[in-house]
Image 1 (tube, one colour):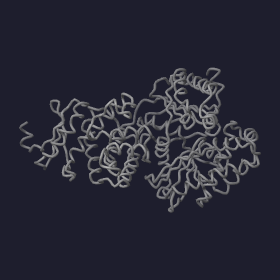
Image 2 (cartoon, rainbow, N blue to C red; image 1 turned 90 degrees about the vertical axis):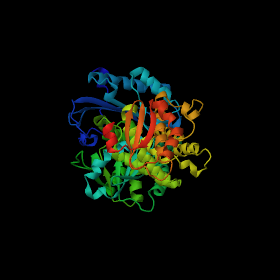
Image 3 (tube, helix red, strand yellow; image 1 turned 180 degrees about the vertical axis):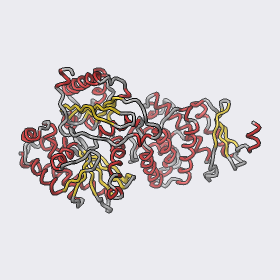
Image 4 (cartoon, rainbow, N blue to C red; image 1 turned 120 degrees about the horizontal axis):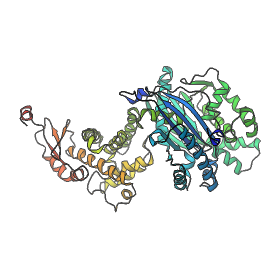
Length: 552
């Protein structure tokens, strides 16, 4: 190790060993491959953490090394709105030292690592400057991960824990993480996500509001309690009258509390903390100063400052929902990122279902033709699969197409004239579960171009996309146009299609339907974009008889 590598601190909250679930079970197919060494880096609100792990032939993950250094990104981002140059350079110094450690492990290819940043970088006004400076100094491409991505990773990582507890799996669980800048809530019942919300209340924000008022330590809890109470009022609206059966707490603060209160807590199981014990421990922490917490528990000062507000948040929420115990998991965002690297996929069929279900709720909300929307979605999916070799897109892009297909007529709720533009607006401003802001923008553009004019540089939203994104929008909008044309009669009479590529033609054969004049006319209007982007003319025709097929 270099000297700078030796100076890195091992994280105290996550020092316990973890044995993640067999990731190969999610990936499908033959998961056997050569062992590989990978790394994930989390640029958080109070620290920058790195975990290095080995993924074996079965896709199982074995942690090799964890590194941690404190940094006050959240304090500056949430109070000043931007990061000081000195703070940026401190992050660069830390990430350079991590880079040297990665070089020793021969982790130097992009596919071997994932670097993300959470709310502090996401909210900083000089975010782009930070990202560019880090890339220039280290070669790291930092992804300011958005709440929908965090929720997706959390959902996939938590499912094995819930499934392992049969009595919990069927109940309604509030999955909660009180972070430095925000609090993430997800209601889960079995494999279904009922709702997800992000609140701009986090431990760093709570501490900063207390410091801004310069209150004595003994009165600081009152200020924090008021803000937590306001957040709980919002939670109650989102949870609804049905309530919840249990809480599953995530985050380093709760993992630390569980490590102090539970014995023989195995990594692959949920820990059970009685609310009474957690409440008593929280009172002990709140009575101590950060300096006292650092000395007693050997935490970093940044972690010591936020520990009390975090634990108090969990306790107050649990009491408000009449819970007697809180479940704790060792699963963290870094575990989820490692699992994604092991799976070599960033999307999951189970999660697709949650997104599509949310889209269908929006279809009903805006009173669109649900039968037509469902039929176009199914045809779009079949067309996407039929020309996979031509577009080379992945499962994530298929989900965007499916959502756009379901929502392509929602703008009619506002008005018929220019409804495709209304549709784009509604999608961008929707509360669609599981899609990031960028994904919503892409989905809106796909739906917006399902009719009439093709994308043009003069269209401001389209022009703001990258070249890769513009091509993606044209490809998926072209597929959506063809699917929509196949249901021009709005009768869903074309139930089955068989597709083939013949001599620069994309031929859609339709069985049991002799007269396709309506659909053929629609394709004359909607087909040119498909030909422009894929270089193939779209042809729809009745399915040849078996004799005709043999004579071809």
